[in-house]
Picture 1 (spheres, rainbow, N blue to C red):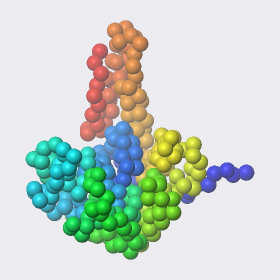
Picture 2: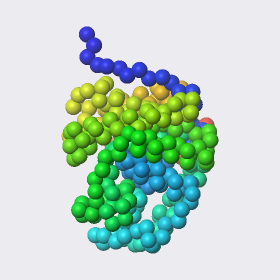
Picture 3: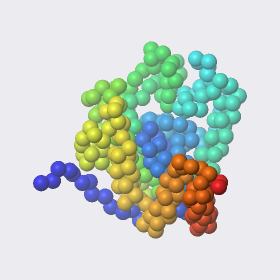
Picture 4: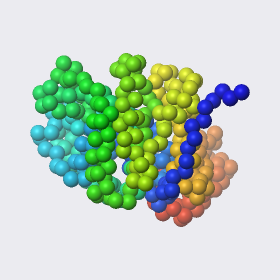
Length: 320
């Protein structure tokens, strides 16, 4: 008897290797995939503006980055002893207005260059629920704990989502015609919105994405959400909050991503890098022993060997 369903996945033609340059935007699940790419030393940048949950927020910041929009005093506000912008996550907020504006504008410049060089853009959508600031009639990326009475909560319809995603694709393609764009839906459940409301939100996201997906147009869909919901259909694959995928689930989804999007020629390098990363994390019983000095010597030789093969790879080396 079969007790699991396996989602069929096809290898894509323009896969990721160690020459690829990847930029990722989106929800907190974006960080899970971004951390894996970083761990294996791919050339990747994850959420330069922090976590972004819905497509309109991602569209807005991609447009700002490509057009090199400059942030000014009018774009920030002071609350709870910190300066914020409604455009980005609170990770960028700061006690200094000048520092926040400097960080925003340097991130715009950084993202502008990254988009120009990218071979792959990965966008993970978390929710179709958005908050509209009543004062300005504008949908925000993050509420920053501003009182909820100042917002209207709305659900984006599939057509609004597909229009936003089409605008994102158009922005990117006008700037970088060769890039592969990968959309996915976060498997994290947003139950604060409600059980039915979360299902409706995810359904709208999936429907909106599939209005624009087309491999011939270099626009792809990776089924992170479906793998979690249909393949890993068990609470043992969740963290204690029963909302977020646990480490086992993230590893499994990453394995599926590997088979679909990572070039097989990169696997040997990934294996070598994994061995080095585990060795770097090793805590010796006796740091001054001869055996540990030999261990460090071998480790440094392995690091030197891999960095000669892949020039951009860098490790923080341990010294004997």
